[in-house]
Length: 78
Image (cartoon, rainbow, N blue to C red):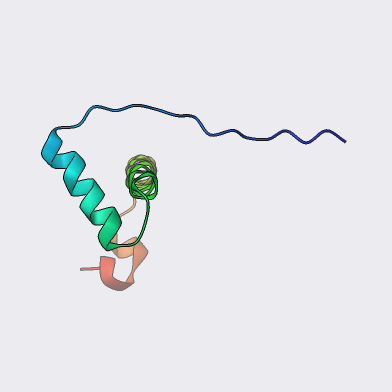
């Protein structure tokens, strides 16, 4: 059996000096690496993007089916 290793990819980014220092300060304060802080930011960005896409699909489905807030009950019902 062959095991494939996933090697890390190095990416260089250019930030304003104050933002770079701010990221480093946050990482130090939270006892994390700058990489971890950047990863966390990217993961949150991806999750938010996926949530907006899911919400858009849900809105289309609700409109297509002619549903109203009352159909959902609970806090959605007026």
